[in-house]
Image 1 (tube, rainbow, N blue to C red):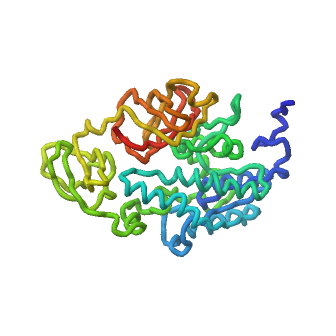
Image 2: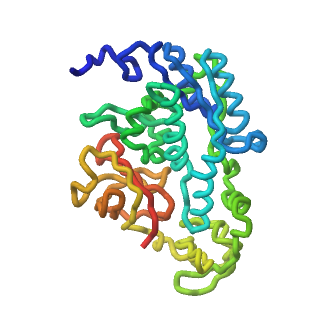
Image 3: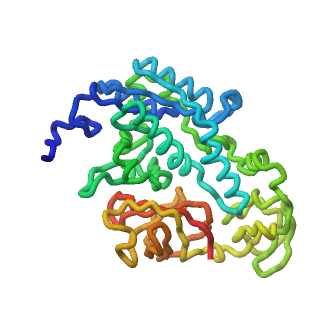
Length: 380
């Protein structure tokens, strides 16, 4: 018999908040702190958990990085203030194995990885989620800007109400099983100002704390220096060549370049503006060419996580929108399944700078629903 929705609490359970245990993944930032404070004030049995993802001593010096020493301290202060238990879990080895090592290997392979997606997929929504279940929690809540809505066949993933804060690109690999257990209490907010106003309302010390902008283990945005520390000697020099075969100069390592890059190539004095159009790791070559060479229409995608109501392979093609970079709007595309987890994506309007290692996320043609996505793995 279906439950009367009026009997459900704000997290969707047919019991009082006091009898509903929720683990809140706390990074120490304002978003997850507000989630924890909000749920604690509503009377839920809140347990805060912060992950230590890399060396605590080294982390203290890293400004603007999430899950660093100061962030652990900030999360603990919020828990003390709001009166709920808080735990710090050492996930350093898991994080290195599941995220950092692949990041390094992807870069060395000429790809442009997105480690934040892998962290959500392999650490937060896998190991931490299992820990939440071990703590007998009814669900796990995070500060992500995304929405979970109940659909006809189960929970659906939807973009955040605030398009400027939407994190759907980084959460496409959330599985239906994970989605049934997760909650995103901030997804309906219209602006970050609302979140900060809530933090001020609860008197949280992190109300004015700046957002972290970079990958947590690359706080200065210098990916190449991190790769060189992880893989000494990885930056082998080679040639910068034009797509027509001309040798234009030399470089200090393919890892210093990304597809679509124009600045900092060190090959001035040419009549035409040139862009990085290909990274040939085996030949140690950075291939450059005119802007039109960056235009891509067909993209091979693998490791697809499908969130549609029908099986992915139940149709020959899906007419959806896709996003190939986190900062770009979704564009019209035709997705042709090749298997349950692989597809060919045809962009109706070619995109520039499509790079292996980036995600290709699927969106409904109309509305806010996310249909999953996959990984771009090579260019034609």
